[in-house]
Image (tube, rainbow, N blue to C red; front, top):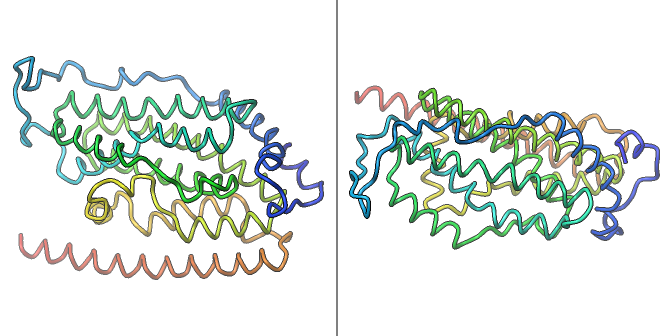
Length: 324
């Protein structure tokens, strides 16, 4: 049902509502937002964003030239961010399995699951084609990293709860959009920036879809959803966190300003929370109020941690400048 209609009905308790009933309650909202998504989504073709004329054979059966770092137009940080983003996209089979199992393959939910998967599928293809055609990365190392990462799969801590999963992807799709967009900007390479801006637009539309579902769920069961949002915000991890050497890679990306704690708090968490009126709601019971207070304290803690990171980053950059 539309969110406006949901406000007029008695609030549900998700604790007493099984997953099937919850998904049934939300299905009209899914149908409404799927129709909206199909109206605003613009068709695009990954192959038109890849400079194929720059390509040449690699060493191997075709007898081309081996890759070496000097062939890349991108610096090490840009390559690291692109590889991390690509490896994250590569795990699409695991993501599809989780949401198809949780949301189902029938009705509006199923239509959305398959549409989302189809749109996400072009992201990894496009990024890999760009990286290999422009010789931006070591193709052997990239393939080995893909095999290692996909062999682990992806096991989301939110996979058993539909509302936790909806809350998670509301944040995660926005985080992914920002990571792609900022990687493109940082790269300084126009073709890379155009491609990642196109991918980021897809991710933004996916975020809007899930964020609208989150808002509708809030109107149905505000206390339960508030607890779910708190749980997800407190334990949030990007789906690429299982990539080998993720911590080292994420620190490099954070120092470059591509994605860090400040961005996560101010450009991911807060915009979604404001959109669903987290701090304006007057329909919360005692449990929901406690969860909101904890969420507010969490945001304050993230702000303090972001300030500490910024101080350390600035000192690190000053030392680097002094050495140069």
